[in-house]
Every structure is written in C-alpha cells, then in structure tokens.
View (cartoon, rainbow, N blue to C red):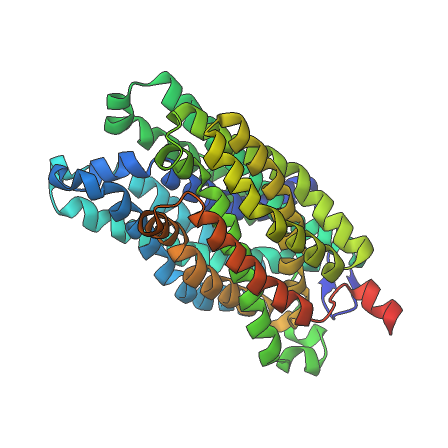
Length: 427
C-alpha cells in the first residue's frame, strides 16, 4: 500500500475489469439518456393522451428534464456517503437505484392502459433515476483518481468518458436495429421498451463487479489533519460549475442530433440513428487520447485549444447540415464536433476532480456535477427544441452550443493547472 501526493492511500492497481465496473454507472446514465432521447416520440405516444399527440415530443422532453431536479439531492446524499463510508458502498447504492428506475420505466403500462397514472409513474421513475445519477459520478470518479498513478490520472478518469461513448454507440446500435427491424406501430407499442430492458440487463453484472472492488478511501487515521478538514475554495466551486455546465450543454447538444436530424432535417429514423453511432465511435476513440494528452501536456492547454477550435467550427458545421440535408453531412459534422468536444471536456472534468481535497472529493464532485448537469443538462434538449421552433432556424442548436463554449472557455482560462506533475515542474 502506497500513499500518493494528495494523501490518498493506494491499493493494488485495479484490473481493467474493475475499471469497467467503476465506469459502468456513467455508461448506463448515458445509455438511458440517449435511449430516452431516441424514443422521445414513441414515449410521448405511450404516456400522454392521444389528443395531445402534437405536443408529445415537447411533453416528453420536459418530463425527461424533471429527473434533473433530484440530481443535486442525490449528489449530496450518495456523494457524502462515498466520503464517509467509502467509494464502493456509495457506487453500489447508486447503481441499484438506477436499476429500479430504468426497469420501472420499461415495464410501466401506457396511458391507454392506466390513464393519468402512466405519466405520474413516468415522472416518479425519472425523479428516482435523477437521484441515483446525481450520486453516481462523485464516488466513481474519486475512485478512479485515487486508484491511478499520478502520471496516468487523465487516462484513468477518461475511462468514464470511454464507457460513456461506448454506451452511446450501444444505444445507437440498439435504436437503429429496433427502428430498422420493427414497423412504426410495433416501435410505438412495445419496441422502445426493449431498448430500456437491454440497459437494465447490465445491472446485476455491475453490482457483482462493484461489490468486489477494493476500497480506495483511507481510514480517518491514515491521512493528515489538513486533508480531513480541507474545504474546496469558492473559486474552484464556481469555475467547476461553469466548466462542467458548459461541457454538459455541448454534449447534450450533440446528443440531440438524432432528434434534430428527424425533426429539423427530416431524415428517416434509421439514418438519424446513424448520427449517434458516429458520435459513439468518435468519442470512444477520442476519450483515451484526451486523457493521455492532458497527462503529457497539462489540462489547460488541451481543453482550451480544443474548445476554441470547436467554437470556430460549430456554426459552419450546422450551416453545412442545414443546406445539404444529407446523412453524410450530419455524420461528418457530428464526427468533427464530437472529437473536439471530448478533447476539450475530459481535461476540464479531470481538473475539477483532482483539485478537490480527498476527504470531500466524492461529495464535492457529486454536488458540483449534479448542480451543473441539473441546470444545464436538464433544460438543454427542451431549450434547443424551443429555440429552434421560436427562431425558425436550423442553426439554433449551434448558437446554443457556441454560447456554452464561450462561457466554458472563460472559466478554463481562469482555473489553475491541476496536473500534479506539470504543477510540480512549474514549482
């Protein structure tokens, strides 16, 4: 057992399977999110009265946003549990609650069967899912930072994003397969439920793997008093909220591309799902590169460079898509923006995580992340849809993302470099 520079106690380096188990909760979060986005139209048909069919998409996206309201509470409760009892028990709790929520959504009867109880149950399961997801990211990311060698922290934390994009790819493939194999009527009636049940199937596997993880949280007597009582500075909290909020807005803007391709560009459903497959493949490849680059070059140079290039390209990219109305143009733009988004956002997330004192890392990160995602992610898809309808412009999502990028770049310029080896060289 070996102590690292920030006072954490290192156990035996975890296996690849253990790292996958840690990041599985983040993967399930994005699988659930993207699946809900893909089948927003079908879910609206199922859970809302037929007379409101014209408002089904907006109602469904608003319902999805409700789940973000409980994220801060989950971050506070489960994240704090990770600091008091350990990272492992907190991850088991959050993953168990995710399983209940996603399975409940998949099996809840529709409005035609149980009337107004259907949307009530839909909202209840989204609230539970939000609570679980709010508490997931803190303990799991704290675990990865504490299990990593100092010179590979970026790569280890990038595992979160790697599994996130793997989940995006899986969701896209499942959605594409169901939409291609089933008729629109079958997709409306029961096909969308199959996609959620696929996600629910990984819950037992994840729970078994997580229960076997070694703990990285040291006993109180194994660290210095300063590490136990340290509190994050207000400046870090504010900058962390802004950076994660900006990254969330851009990521969810890209995740909206399947709905955008159908709703604004009028592409067939099967072609629209292809955008998410492209997003998943490109993000899967870019995330470990982002982690390695930030380990070698520092967090700030990598995230600022990528964010600046993305800010330059996002408007032209949407102009190309809106002019060509082709699947190829959508796939090309999604590929470029996804790579830039990942290379810019991964180092920002790592910066916030490793800058927090270890004894409050789980709860602090969980709360910062949950609040940022609740504020920015909870309204993103609904806001983009409303902005597009109000402006009558297919460029509305690009303007939304550009605004988020500029705000995020400002925070990134102000935050201190957190890469311990780069900071040590400067010192």
